[in-house]
Length: 349
Image (cartoon, rainbow, N blue to C red; front, side):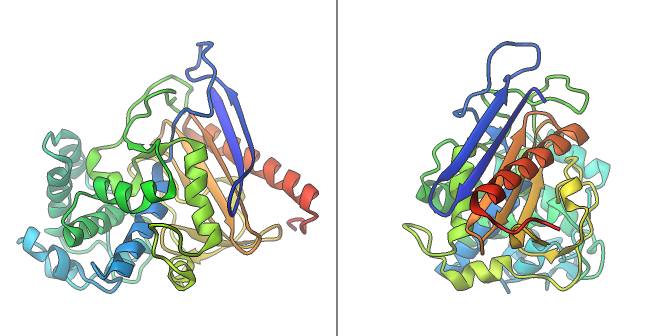
């Protein structure tokens, strides 16, 4: 990897953190803890948490439907979408397609209007067609999360980007967050070539957040604590709902941004199913754990969260593809092994 970083997170602090490598392959400028890493689809857990905050406010319900919230904004909506709920979208079982049609993806890239209008046009083109598969069928979808984000901004009357900053990230003390390409270190393609870009702004709720790993750890700690804090009105019951299972196991196709929802080799063991913004799995070292990976094809990151044990490990690399996934998986495996040894936790079978 050009650069690789890993963090062990507890309920209230960083237990251990390590950085190695350079900002751009071929240059001597070292990666720094203050550099921002792209989180790709790990943004989805933030979108689901924001939804829970707005539910706690009474601005929207998990049972709110696309027709109720979006109907007036998209007059051409196909009837099959009208009863799809916010929770179904957050669990990837609301009928949204795995990938947008090429012409729709090109439209998202070409949009030069304000981000909320680009998101509305992108979603309107999807909503004008019938749902891609029956409701209740789990298909991992960036478009489903984009639609969920649109529902949140319609309900609150604010752009998603403003909402997630003001209602979730700033209350947690996160100051480095932004959207799109990272400002310090460069991403790298699967072949290691430096390239810094991102997906269209319309899909921000599905995967365009970047921040330092120290700041990401603050969000991870929130899901370890599972309790209210200043500015975050979520109690244990709210977190239990976010972390609860869907009965069917998730499909995991590669999405249009190149990301797979689960980490690579660490996900080869059976998974239990899909929560909101997370995949639930069982591990000997952590019991019931939450996990998710993210990539915009130029970066890769992964989180493993063990709420019942009070710790998590996260890792990130500034290169995408299988090499980035393998490096992050190995970093997490080593961090967990170190923690098991220090805490005398049970070893994974």
